[in-house]
Length: 121
Image 1 (cartoon, helix red, strand yellow):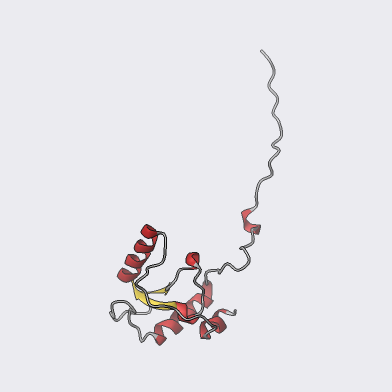
Image 2 (tube, rainbow, N blue to C red):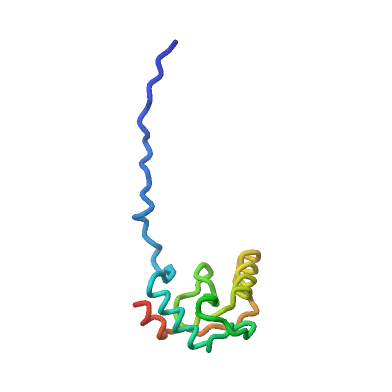
């Protein structure tokens, strides 16, 4: 039988930990900055879901981007709101099914807000 030799791979392994986010793309807020931001937005929204008006505890609420980061939304205060778990689930499912932001949501004004200061932008 012929002897088989192993060839070294010519393709280098990609280290995904060192991949940079594209310029202009928004990062999700995480860690203690997210906790502070969620509390700030929840207080601004008087502890109510901005879609159905239901009163929600801080722990049971969802910090949501009105226009998702994947659709070009940002982390500015005007693009963040408090939702109850049910409304957040429905909104996310609608966006996933259509592949675009929900057209029935109110317009979001741009600009820098207090949220930018909280997360250190």
